[in-house]
Image 1 (spheres, helix red, strand yellow):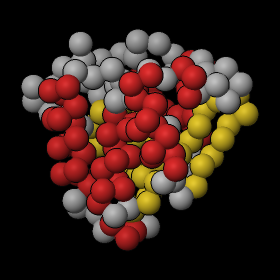
Image 2: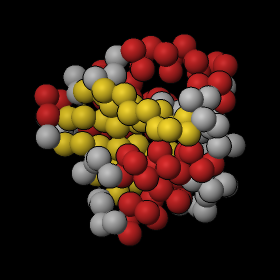
Image 3: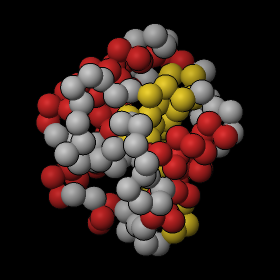
Image 4: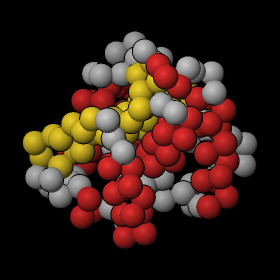
Length: 159
């Protein structure tokens, strides 16, 4: 069983979304869908792209919800996809945080790293823009000895 987690940037331009989607799907093609579990917090951007790709490939999805107010903090235009993906999760891990803040997001990243075998990182290689960002999760994964597969195709941009 391959348990793959995702960390990555949010608020990506549409052209980058297409590049990232293709890159994630190419990476997932190397796994047996029947033996693949994707673990995601379903944030807008990389998390939702990854979750959709895992399900489309025939894998299973587990969701880590960082806080009770998490959904309220997501952009309105990604809520329908969040709800659709959450409804298809084989398992949902709900953390005890109330507020959806940097501490809750980092706690979700730490929790995810404890239940996966490998991390996909949709990451431009730059420092995190706030505590609990992509770079922080990548650094923690590497410190724990987890394999990290960076997905940042040529032409991808953040802003």
